[in-house]
Every structure is written in C-alpha cells, then in structure tokens.
Amino acid sequence: MSFLTGSGKSQATQQMAVSGLQLQSSAYGKAVLIIYGTMLIAPNLIWYGDFVATPQSSSAGSGGKGGKGGKGGSRSYTYQTAVALGIGEGPIANVGNIYVDKNITSAAALGLSTFVGNYGQSPWGYLITNHPDQALGYSGIAYLAANAYQLGTSPQLPNHNIEVIGIDAYSISDTIHDVDPSLVVADLLTNPHYGCGFPISRMGDFSVYQAYTLGY
Image (cartoon, rainbow, N blue to C red; front, side):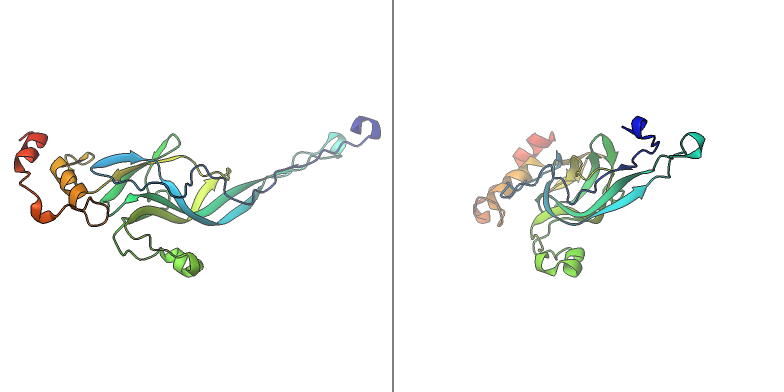
C-alpha cells in the first residue's frame, strides 16, 4: 500500500538462518560393506555436530527517487559442520576420487581425513578434544571425517560417491585397482571378524583357481 501512504521504502531481503544440518542419508543398523578391489560407494553419515551458520550481508541498494527511500541490502548464510562419513569394513587401502553431486574432487580438497578402519583404531582427535563422551574409535570401520566441512549456501549435505580402494586390492595401473578372487574366497571363509569361521588348516591350494581367474 506504499502508493497510498507515499512511502518509497522497501524491506531488505532477509534469509532466516537454518539451525541444523539437513540430512540425506543416515541409517542406524545399516549393513557394513565389505569392499574388495575398487568400488564406488555412497557413504553413511555416522556422526555430525557443531553446525555453524555464518551471515553474509550484501551492500545496501541504491537510493530511491530524489534520494529518498533507498532499498535495503540482503542477507544470506553460509554453513559448515563437522561430519564423519562411514565407508565400510576395514582396513581399506585408501580412497580415490570423490564425486560430490556432479563434481569430481578428493578427500584432501574437501578437508576430509581418512580413517582406514584398522581394528583397535583410535578415535578421531576432534571428537576427543571437543566431544569426549562421543569419541568412538569405530574399530574395524573405515570412514572419512572433517571438523569444518564447507556446505556453501545450502544447509544440506550433498550427495557423495566415494571411490574406495578396498581389501586385498592390487594395482593394474595408476588408476585401476582389482582383487585376486582367490583371496576373496579365502577371506570370506576364514576372516576372524566377519568370515564364516572355516578353519584355515583345512584350506586347500587355490593356485589353479587363482591362475584361472587372473588369466595366467
């Protein structure tokens, strides 16, 4: 109704800050992947906290007609959070490319530290310092973690797909990693943590099977 009152002022555009991370995938009781060779997997969010919204104010708009009733500026927010993204059974060898939505990047570029999932691995140092009551070691679980993951102007954690170089992987080239199938069979039968409990002493010779599967 400003055309009736004679006021030429307009409201500044103000965006409300979001108070918490908007999640896409965090499932309790989800099966833990066993990754052999190289696989592209979607991680499971296993911990998050310390969500921060930082206001970003633009400069004020130009003045109104005759220098009166200038338009106000606008305010938006950028967001960051601490996260831990579960990958699968460890110990893995490493992680390769990370696909965030449609972008290809790396753990280092995203500020993510890699925990390969050794049995008895120590808790994340950030949790020990800032949340000691939540500082789990996640023994035998490989995961990535960042204490200040940058979300940009969206409070939502983007889609991640992580190239994982897993258990018993060997290099075919600098970028391709495979696994010896005979090692997979032996591991699934005898691994003391997730195997079938088959006695190692009763394992036969896999050399013929290995030669067949690897094309020797």
